[in-house]
Length: 201
Image (cartoon, one colour):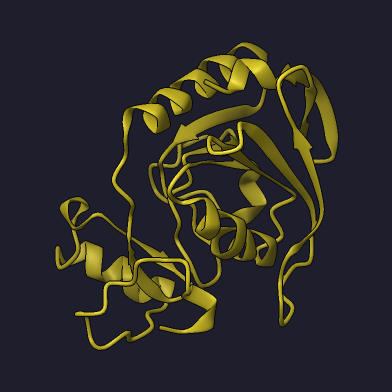
């Protein structure tokens, strides 16, 4: 296991940790070699097992979806646990706010240029969401990343991504707790404030 993937459950039985390109990953799915039943996502070229879900995790996703649905500005959509295509990864964030697409993303997945915000709901995945997922989103230049942290009951708000550098990361982190108001920042524009209390179980 490499240091870059230390917090992720790698599927080590496939070609001894062989790294795949995004195009190769797409080809494996097109050929039916990988299916939804395999429960995998591509992270930095590695096939990674998605973590099993539990009621607090899934319930929080739907809680956040309902709140976002009430305030989302025109031109944006919310996707749940759906793929986004990045240069070396194809993660499936718990929620992503993406620009509307005329074809409804039926011919491609959203890319970083389409994404205004990614959100991960974290309990057992907290370490990986803070490191591995933050790294790939920062490398892709996704402007805003939230972790709904169920362990510490706070929303971690990451901004100022480094882009494709040797050690990609977000330069800014702000934590919001019950009683705080979280700005919804899409494409550099703060559209509305959301209550942290309303997003946390």
